[in-house]
Image (cartoon, rainbow, N blue to C red; front, side):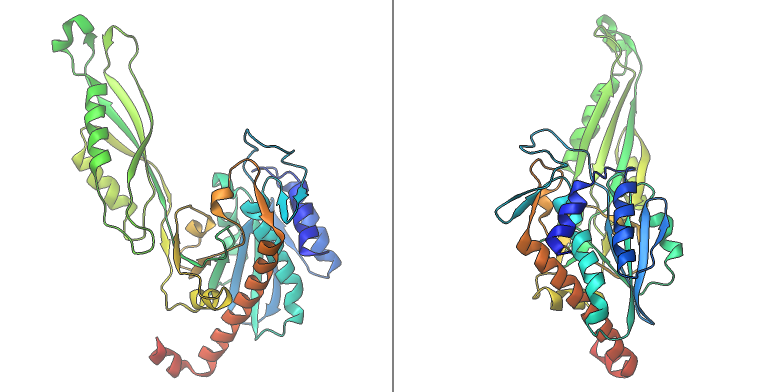
Length: 362
């Protein structure tokens, strides 16, 4: 099958989060026809191509968000219009999956230096569920990783994290006619929200500064009663120079409201520019980058593994109606992944052969 045919088939199989079974089965059957043994846990797949060290993880996700309003075609019926394939997931991130699959099938013929590429196509990325974090221990030791997301094939060397805080302003209730006896929790929350809007945080060279965004607010029981409670949520898209625990503690000390950490597991990430995986990606894409990525991904769960986020497509098309990927973007993605893997293995081989020179170079 051609890359375009593989992508078209992937898009034709609905795979909203938690419903990736059918697409996992199709990919498994495709790989088995090429003699590749596939392992599976729930709706997560992985397999190896090559042998020996280093061991490079090549990962993207199978799931999509549900279709939104505004589609001009059936989101589950892929449709070519000129060079574009329209369909849910074509851009995020089945284009990456298709390109990685094609690269995996071509690797044995590419005469790459010694190394093992561990391909993992995982589930529930869009909801932070039972995906890459549940199978990491099954993949064996990993020296570096590639995460496939639509980046216009720019090499992302940093990624924002996500810290969500639940804030509760506590007050004292009374009849509105006797407001002097009360302590208005909504007024207290409003003061805190104004303070949050004015806060500034140290910036990051690839990602810029983080800003606190209040995304939900609830409070008050009736129109004639001063509210004794007001609850609001704060979403902070953090940068690698900011520690989640420290930020939460500092905000708690500055706000009148009670501050509770609602979610802190999406950690911000950054890869040192001297890491071979980032250099390999830049060599493969014509030195486009490094750049920062403002969206989260499964990179958040890869711990300290040196990682680059890169893939065909445009992040601004994601989660939008009339999502698409072009033939040329897909073809370039296949070439980029093949070259990236080759470049990384080649760099690792040189380091093994000349470790002293590599240390001096860095």
